Length: 227
Image 1 (cartoon, rainbow, N blue to C red):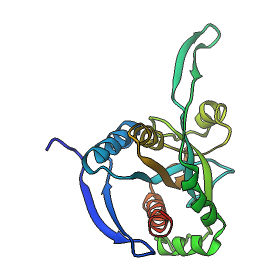
Image 2 (spheres, rainbow, N blue to C red):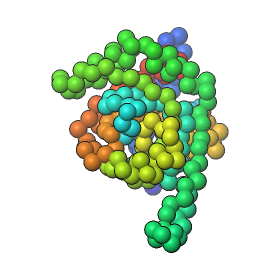
Image 3 (cartoon, helix red, strand yellow):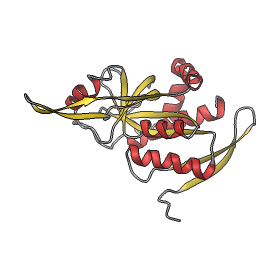
Image 4 (cartoon, one colour):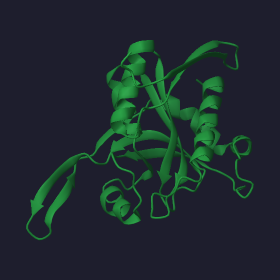
């Protein structure tokens, strides 16, 4: 009652036949607030050991390619800061980025996946919705920059994100919110995203379903084999 989320429940066995209980929910809307609310509500109702964020992200040209998987070792709130008067340009944004790291032990399996070309090709082939897309995919581990808006401008990324977060590998609207909530409510957490566009003027929805499938398949592999 009075809950905008729907929850899906199942039980599976991991590679060692150990039973695991999974609860899946889809955020009511895009964005850091909706993701944080979904994480908090799921923790309240089901008391899970961990929260895994899975979905799509915008890539960083030169660092990632379409279909690449990105795992957030660090989440940064690039929109945190202050807007102050500047006599020369009227006003300017002064960033004060908040950063949250995940458990290093949870990153270790993904470092192995990164070097496992056969695994990445198998996952790509299972999720291949486009006959014209057969490129190999890569896995990246690093910083995901989270903000409240959909970004369709490379110029914005260069000026407001890259200038203050040189090592970021992807942009999304949820990861930081999930990390913040899970950390403060005492749960483990990790975010697994897949690049569906380059966060520039060519951004569209064509590859979103493909990217979401890739992210979910690497998440499932992690849960069954290494959680």
